[in-house]
Length: 63
Image 1 (cartoon, rainbow, N blue to C red):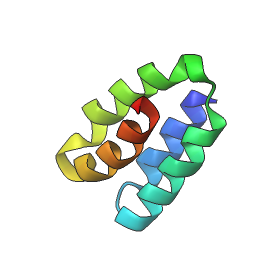
Image 2: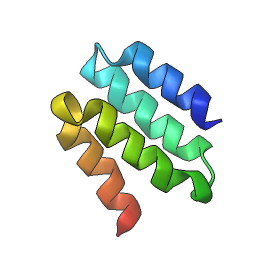
Image 3: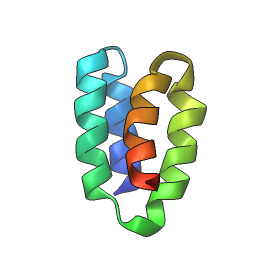
């Protein structure tokens, strides 16, 4: 499922609102064991353009 979510995020990364929507949906699809690897991939791939959005969702998960 993680590969599917990654593919979707890559395809919608041109649009901030779509990216945030799909990130939120993707987080609900993943099992807890996948979340840390997914978080690292998201920051490596998207932190230059979407770091505030990533922080919004991944800080919620940590807290």
